[in-house]
Image 1: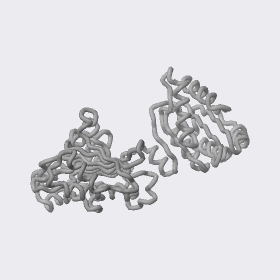
Image 2: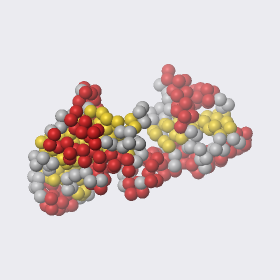
Image 3: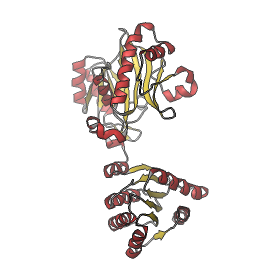
Length: 386
């Protein structure tokens, strides 16, 4: 789950990281009032879950309250990479002398949190990593030992930070690690962390991504989710407790288990690659899916106009095939699918599930015994509807 910039910085503040005294506005009048309160100049920043806001005109420096009103009116309602701006952050302008990049993320290969820092902050870190990877200092954190003082000193020294700021930098880095750990974050990023003309360190921009699987432990953060930028299908899947990611192919896949789902997608790609046919989605209904979840999954798949065929591949364990079959019938009675469906049911209550499907006598349903056969049939059906 992504937090907006203002949500990320307010979270940083809760952990003792200094941030500008900005506020959020949803109308130009609110932006003017905040600018008057803060005193000019102020920065008006669009709050959307995409990068490149500045290049798109979503970040403006206002010299007074009237200009803040005018810029907020321009930015609110603006579309940036397909997302409509519904709120802006009004921050006091900072006297920036130096910009620093600082982030903590997951190093999956090492199984540890990873600190990434560079004295060349304020720019696209991906581009910096491609062009000058040596400019990024990397330091792993042992989750048992935690972040040590010698590590913060090493990072500050290695990236060439003036010695006078080492103590403040170390304090901010320790607070950022606490924020990352205690918030169940996948990423906690400050870009840039600036050194002001007064010699202070200030987090003027921030980005936090929370692990969706840990949101049950983070109720205060979970309620901050802004789903306005999500595809409707992904929002519906989350509400139904289904793992779903939309892709660009033509075969809608419904599978139980992430590994089996990936294999199913690979098989459709294998047999369909020559005809540019592949999976339209990743969808895992999980173990123990109810008929209601199966029905919701099928509705979500069929809402994609690109889908020419649905491939349902269920290996019954905790998930019973007869319950999956009941869910398929429920969804078909509601959605009235107009594309062929290839169904493979194996495992717990497979014979009962196949009998339910067979007795329903639904048009355009094709049965398969193996995954290979199912993938081949799905690709052939998709080709026929090209």
